[in-house]
Amino acid sequence: MNIGILTLRISLPGCASLKEKRQRMRGMHQRYGRNPAVAVCESDQRDRLESSEWTFVVAGLRVPEVESLCSEIENKVQRTVDGRVMEATREIL
Image (tube, rainbow, N blue to C red; front, top):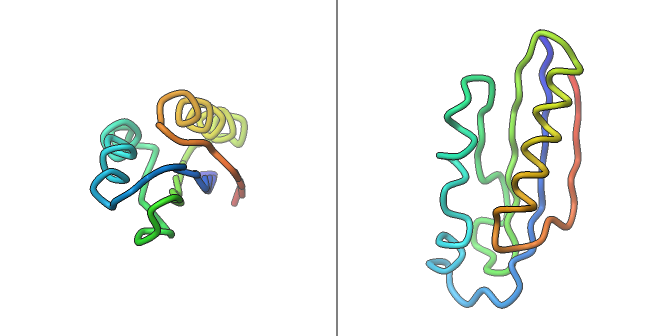
């Protein structure tokens, strides 16, 4: 079993309230948490209005499978979130 940890720091320019932040980030758990190989949580920046950090833990039998799923998640977040991915870090265990 291989584990990948993908952490994305997202900038939310112009975000004026925590309610707006939740609306802009809504659906992260539903979109990615449905996959039994993925666990997702908001890992930092919870109280900051203009940024958010999300961590995805991905499990797979082979490293290429884990890396592929991490890339898929990162690309999908960049396309679907009303914000900008400022930093992405990956670690394979």
